Image 1 (cartoon, rainbow, N blue to C red):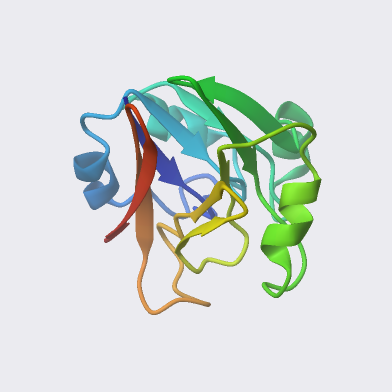
Image 2 (cartoon, one colour):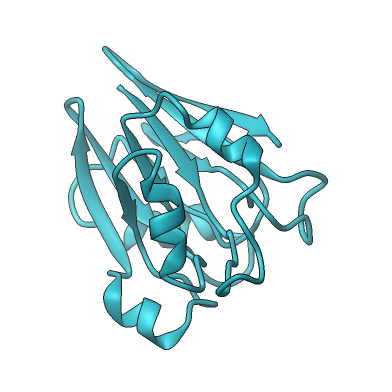
Length: 160
């Protein structure tokens, strides 16, 4: 199974669009996970032409987006338990905060908020932040991610 991972797209109406490169990177994915800060629900439609989308709300989302999406999700993918959450606060201590917000064991925790891509194994959990596909405020480049799920679960950051 191949899963596209995106976060912090910050799309509001026609103000921004999903970069064409995202469509290229995600063209063969089975599912897309969006880790919040979509802003507008139109983002789900834009990504939904590629594959089914599961998303959570972020701190910058419009009120209607926040009310339509959960704050976190726990998903079974190919025998692995994946937590999906946006994150909050300063980057320092983020993994600890978001890890504690899920009950039970996670194999992978997908998150956003920092705009900084990261793949890190900590205490048996793969923490995966794809960075931002549209905003370089806190990172040197825009990026998305791919989760590869087979006998193991692994992640890859793709610079846009």
